[in-house]
Picture 1 (spheres, rainbow, N blue to C red):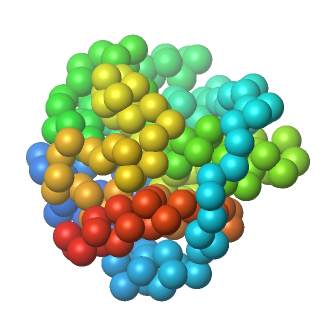
Picture 2: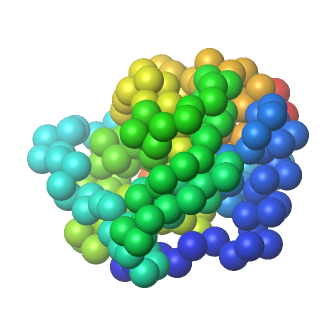
Length: 209
């Protein structure tokens, strides 16, 4: 299923949220629910031992799909999350700057920017996505309507890998609140399970809100 980009009003609200928590320049994933709502959502999720990674492949989560015109999902996020971004006829950035909220770092070259899945594809697979259809996994991997995708430094994204919040948190501690809210929103939206240690870490992060 293809997803359209977030409405301008949603982007503006998201900018405000990240400005409050992330410093000089915001990224613009849709604003997650409040901490109190996130706590309620977290309490509703199934806690169980993580499933197997057997059979997992990124190819089972097709991305990046075309979202609008010539722009695929990655390019849409680069345009959404950057400052002063210009693109060519193929939607490739020709200029712009990106502020990575994970590690409080400016990036001036789009090739040094990764688009992070807040809930990694491998994590989703082990939390229930292994039973989904390919179409649903494609939707998950390209979903711009919830806070599942964000432009960050390649180094921070690769440091995170497929780790959950019990194993990795953004080095920029000021975004722990919103990162937890985003993670919970994604898992709640897709009814994914979580581990006990993961729930504990998310509860602690919500405590910083």
